[in-house]
Length: 223
Ligand code: SF4
Image (cartoon, rainbow, N blue to C red; front, side, top):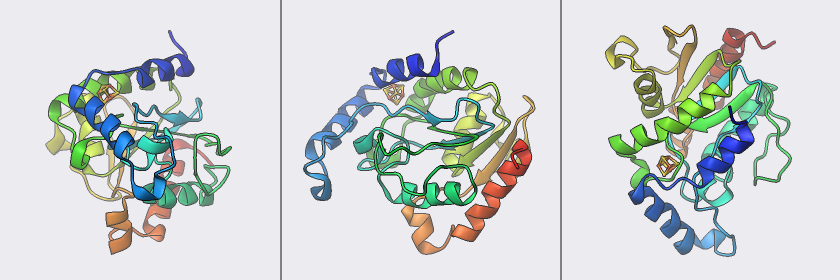
């Protein structure tokens, strides 16, 4: 069995999805003006966090100018600027800011990954791309034996996890705050995604997300 580091090295070399390989590299070449001097990661973004994690945070896919730029999940964009302070308030992160792969941030009891590890055009992976990247999800989960709770960020992440476990979606409907007991003994907990679109419109606020994290900790037995 490989280690998380060995898996990380395999993931960042993945080129299974031609459309996403082309897109992640194009975004990295064109860049956003604010980051014009940055060297974009422009590769698959592997998960990161505590190898003994009891909570697995499952997102959708890298942000074009966030993790596709920095190379670490949720790092460097508005979603991360909402997520990491919340993890820090909950005692699950060593610091509230996430700026780059070498910023010293450590997660405690939490591992963060996503259904699709390359940035998709318009944030919309295809069915085939979800299926292809599910291979890496299986490999990652196999190396995280202590996970008790999946925290899905958004409906698409929720459905990708159900597909991954070959579960019928209508039996486990997505709703913010919903909890689903899965046949594998884990709990799937849902939250609206931490995207700017949700946090700026008030669909998801700090109080709501703090409550979800508190529930995830309770379900995972983290005090
Ligand atoms: Fe590989 Fe996943 Fe990226 Fe597709 S989305 S190229 S499977 S890492």
